[in-house]
Image 1 (cartoon, rainbow, N blue to C red):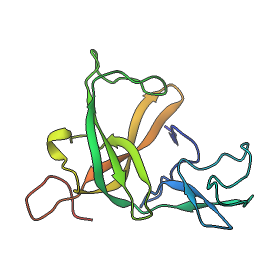
Image 2 (tube, rainbow, N blue to C red):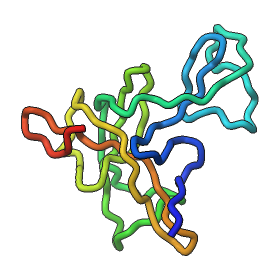
Image 3 (tube, one colour):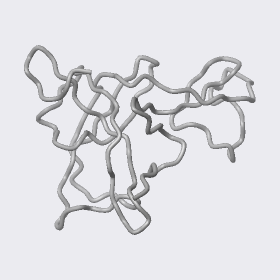
Image 4 (cartoon, rainbow, N blue to C red):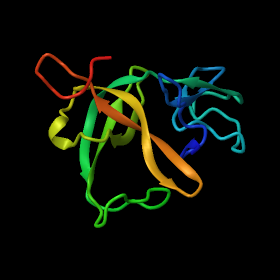
Length: 154
């Protein structure tokens, strides 16, 4: 079965996955999600007149900036694996580059496992499986700490 990203070009699926951002070649402004090749190629920084972007990986680790649980069933490409739908946790994670990126929390973790300021790392997990194969998505996984939190030390 073939595993493909649910959103092409937003993250890598390597051994050590990373989110991908666009960086202006003139002022180094970062944008996530990355600018599509079909989109107008101009810097999103209003103080810059740059017209070229390059794709760069972002840090795999960040800290929880905010979090909540999703009590609603999201739209496609999400396909619930349970009937009825079971809520899941979402975390807004601040990366060292200064961006805050929203994503689901890794399987097996919920809001009870999160606290603002806690370290998390990017993992790639299965979003759903259908006749076309497995679709993957990035998620945030809590990193273990001295206070005994769940997760694995990386």
